[in-house]
Image (cartoon, rainbow, N blue to C red; front, top):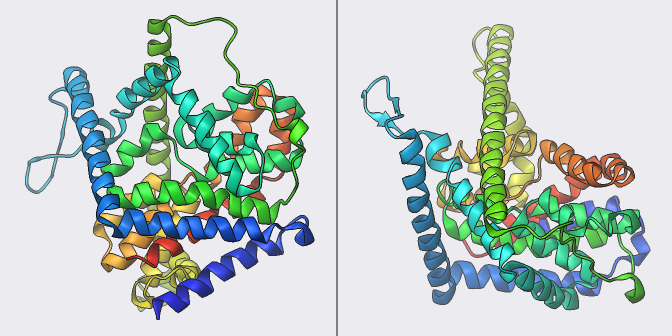
Length: 406
């Protein structure tokens, strides 16, 4: 039964993208079909095959080792700091120290790979291969791979020279990739919150899903003569330690920014839960015991169900999905451990959560582009809601496809 529901779900999400398409007659369904097949193949390989499970396991071990070494630096600076559980009086996990600060080391490693030209080589040629199956340009393919490694704001620095000349339709695809993927620097943090196999699966599926939805919402044909990739190298060659210091500081900034966002969003959601619960409790004379997250769960429950989540889990799952959209993926991931969900529902939700598709990302991406080119930044801001709508559909399609193998 879940296979039939999954097929209906994929068709529904594709139809929703088609409804807002800027050119419904020009959609290249052949390439979309090819990419959906590729998504199914990767989902099967990563979730069901011995080789895929082995690969994810080794990748997880690698990130765990990096996190363990990162904690040596964290403990050197923040050693002895811990929250005490009010009941057991035992130290509890400090999220900022154990989950966010290891981002600093991962960022430094990315800087080293970038400096030694290893990452640019991987990005360029992996993007070239992907461009052969997505029916789009080399620039779009390069940008999608780069977004998955560098991050949703940093990626635009690498194409700074081209920004003024990129037309609106191509700009949508570039920013859609940035919102649909996640940066490598925080994948290690995700590994500590959800199962690594779901994280890896989501990263791969979202890469192709971004092209699928963008090519439906915003179809176009790229002129080969206007498809060069001009990578920004910087005004002067940095020394190794200049680069290292910059990436370390960038990693720390990311950790602090995520921490600030979590403080604000968790507090706001707590406030909304309290106010909504009190109002409903008073109005109903004590017969209704719902809060804000329960209400948004009812709204998202049908979408959660059509994505393959059992109806018995749909309301709670919908609540977590909506929380991610309204706040960010870290807030939503923090709800998973206490959620009473089936293993299948947990897997589908986990894949859905691994992306930057939320309202805050509209401002982050538009601001990043605007800092490099004012006019293009305004262009991105104008199609911001459509960008979020498309990126959310990418997450739903990836989660639905993953559900076929859970």
